[in-house]
Structure formats: C-alpha cells, structure tokens
Amino acid sequence: MTHTLSRPLVLGDLTVPNRVAMAPMTRGQSPGGVPTEQLAAYYARRAAGGTGLIITEASYIGHPSAGEHNLVSRLYGDAAAAGWSRVVEAVHGAGGVIFPQLQHVGMTRKGAAVPHPDAPAIGPSGVPVSADGSPGEPGRTMTQKDIDDVVRAFAEAAVTAERLGFDGVELHGAHGYLIDQFLWSGTNHRTDAYGGDLRARTRFAAEVVGEIRRAVSPGFPIVVRLSQWKMNDYTARIADTPEEFGVILGALADAGADAFHASTRRYRQPAFDGSDLNLAGWARKLTGRPAITVGSIGLDTEFTSSLTGGSASPTGLGDLLDRLEADEFDMIALGRPLLADPEWAAKIITGREPTPFTPAALGVLY
View: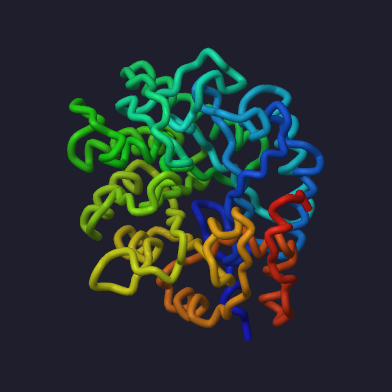
C-alpha cells in the first residue's frame, strides 16, 4: 500500500517526489552571507533521507535594507551565488528538490545592521517592528522608488535562483517581515494605492509575485508563505474571515503564485470560527492551488518552547495523514523533527521510528 506521504505533487512544471517538505529555518551558518560546504551537506542529508522538498532558510535579496545579520545567507553577489550553487548541486546529487526562501526584513532591521550599516529600516509606513516585543526603532516610509527597487530586487533574486539551478522559489510573506508588513493593518497605514483596504494592502505582494512571474520561466514554481501571527504578536491577523483571506490569496494567485505555504504555530488549530479547516486548508479551498501546512507536526509543543530549552515529545500522525489523504492540504512542512533526524521522511514512510527531537539539535548543523 502506498503511504500517503509518498505520493508525488506537481508544482508548476515541477514534480516533487513526495509530500514532505523541510520548513525554512534560519541557522546563522553563512559567514558574510555565503553558504558553506557544511550547509550544503546539511541540506543534502535531508534530501538523501527522503525529504521531497527542501525549502532553505530565508535568504536576503539584493537590496541595502533587506538584511540584518552577517551570518544569514544572501542570494546576491558572486560569493553567495557560488555557495548556493554548491548547495543546489549537493541536494540534486542526493535526489532532492530545493527552493530558496527570498526575504526582505523591512522594519525588523536594527540600526547599523550589516552588510549595509548606513541603510535605513524601511517599511510601508515606517512603523517600528521588534521581534522581542520592545518598542523598536522607527524607520522610513517607503517611497514609490523604494517599492519599485524592492520589487525588482525580489525578481532579480528569483532569476538568480533559477540560473543557479534551484527548482523554484518561496517568498517570505509571513511573520512580520516586509511583505507581511504591507498585508497587516498594524504596520500599513498608507493612504495611497498600497494601503487602506485589504486589496490595496495586498498590492505590493502581488507586484512582487507578478514581477517574478514575468522574469522567470513560465513553469518555474512560485510559492508564497503567509501567516496570521507575527514574531512580536501571536494574536495578529491579516484576515479575520475566510472572505478576507480570499482577497489576499486571489490577488496573489492572479499574479502568478503556484502554491501557498500557510505558517501556523499549531497545524491542528482551526483558522476561522465555524470550520475545522486550518490556514492551509482554507488556502487550498479558496484558490484550488496546492497548499503546504506547517506547525508542531509530530511534536506536542510549538517551536517557541524549544527555543527556550523546552522539551517536545513525539505525537502520532494519524490525524495529519487523514487530513492530507482527504486533500485538506497537499504537503506537510516540518522543522525540528528534521533537525533531529535527517531520515525522518524515509523512516515515517517505511514504518520505522525516527530519532526524537531534543533542543540540543538547535545548536548544531548536522
């Protein structure tokens, strides 16, 4: 009998060999923004261990205000391109499929952040955003030129990704970073075409998707990661109803998004009142496009508890697999279990017991 997770999935012109994705996790192991041979081996181990789709850690696009840390990877410049080329070659050599996640941090950027210490934090309205809950530093409201420059930088990063052999791209439109800052009324106070009602707040994200769609090959997959919650506000919402969520999704699908990666802290949690569907389930229902679910898969606590040293015990996958089999969503993404065991996917599919996760796995690049 074919295991539910072993079924292939079509994204654009790409066939992913199974329904398991490695969720993007920032590891801070790219000195000067350049992926190392150790990082290539790390991703390749997960591909060899049966993970169908590797989604890399968030990588900064080529805009001066895009990044905030010198150990986080970039997707621009010759050195970073050479590093990513080694990663892609290693993952493909292990039989895997790999997408980079493209990121601009927007207003989470702190003053004098490298590699461009003089670049200001920018956002839709210059509203401070702080991941640790502190007041944050005010920044600059983006001009039309800023918007155009950032849209172009996203597209250039996607073109670079395709040139380097990546199989598709994912846009980081979640967790309070720049694209999400436009979507969220808490950080978007604009009164021009990029602010106001939800459709206008989605315009920036749609322009990014549309510009990438025009710049890459027609069948090159574009996935958009979305969330309700932010790193500094777990109660935040970009949409209060399925209808509002449909406005966002519809604009992005029309612009050329092939799939949606719905980030939740607990995949079991319903997204809206009156239905058991989670956020990925609504993305699939509202658009008909493939949807990836994520959030505490296979573990009884969410990732934030592990960041402070909390334990996480394995849980059964029966409910998850039933929902996948019922086509509520199309793929699962997980992080911590794959840090603990690169062969998690192969072991689950063949009925073996994976190595349990412990917080110690967060501190090593294995």
